[in-house]
View (cartoon, rainbow, N blue to C red):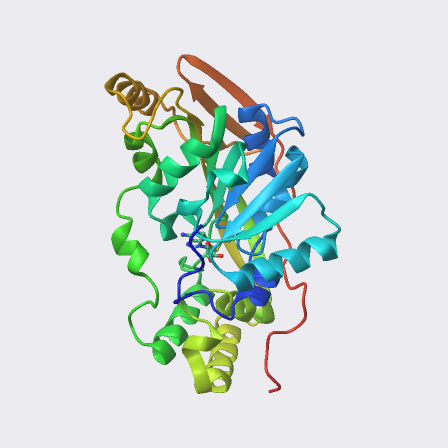
Length: 333
Ligand SMILES: C[S@@+](CC[C@H](N)C(=O)[O-])C[C@H]1O[C@@H](n2cnc3c(N)ncnc32)[C@H](O)[C@@H]1O
C-alpha cells in the first residue's frame, strides 16, 4: 500500500478529532446491521478510519476489523482510543484506502465515514470490490454537520471569525471542486455495486465553547497549523463573538447523519458488463423517498431493494450531549 502522502490536511488534529467531533448516532449501526444482516461474524474494513469513531461503532457487528488511514497521527490516536475504551480485534493499517492490498484478506463490509470525498472514488470502489466477499456490502456515511456551517446565529458568527483570521476562502476545500458528483451517483455509475438504500438520521448536537473550539481544531479548514501564531487572538475573538451570539454557552446544531448502502455486484470486474450497469441504474431509479422522521420522533426507513421494499422503525435516542470529553482545548487565557 502507498504510505501516507507528504501533505496531510489533518496534521495536528488527531487529538482534537477524537475528543470533539460528534459521534455517529447509534441508529447508523442499526441500519447497517439490518440492511446487511450482520451478526458478529466476518470482517470490516473501515476506509479512512481516522481516530476510529466509525470503526468502534461498527466493530461489535464483526469478529475483526481493519482500519485504514493515510495519516499516521490519526491511526496512533485510534489505537490509543481503542486501548482506552478496551476495544479489541482491530488492526490499524497506514496507507491510502484506494491502494488497500489483497494481503488484507476478504471483508464482509467496507465502511467509509466522512472520508470518501477525500479519495479517488472510482479507484477506491474498484479496490473495495476486489476486497469484498461475494455478497459483501458498502456503507458510505457522514456524521452530519461536519463544518458547522448552518444558519444558527452562533454558526454565522463562527464563520465570520474564521474568515477574519484565515481569509475569505475555505482552506483545504479542493475536494469540493473535485466531488461535484454525488457519492451515490459515483457508486451507481461504477457498475460495481448495487445501491440498496440512501437515507439520513436527524439528530441534534450540543456543544459548549471549548467543544466548538476543539471541533475547529479538529478540521482541515481551521486548525492550529493554519492559524500559527495567531492562535491566541483567534481564540479571544471567537470567544467574544460566540458568547455574544449565544450567551448561554450552549451551542446547539441540527445534524443530519447520512448513509449510502450498496451491495457488491456479483461478477462485475474492473469494467462492469453492460447488464450490471443497467441493473445498477435501475436499482438507483427505484430508490424510494429518503428516510423521514415522524413527528413522534421515530424514524421510518424505506429500504427499497429491487421490488422488495421493506420498512423498519427505529426509536430515536435523546439528543447527543456535548462531546467535550478531553478537557479544554484552550490556551491559558
Ligand atoms: C474527516 S476524517 C474521518 C475519519 C473517520 N472516518 C470518522 O468518521 O471519524 C477523514 C479521514 O480520511 C483520511 N483519508 C483521507 N484520504 C484518504 C485516503 N485516500 N486513504 C485513506 N485515508 C484517507 C484522513 O487522513 C482522515 O483521517
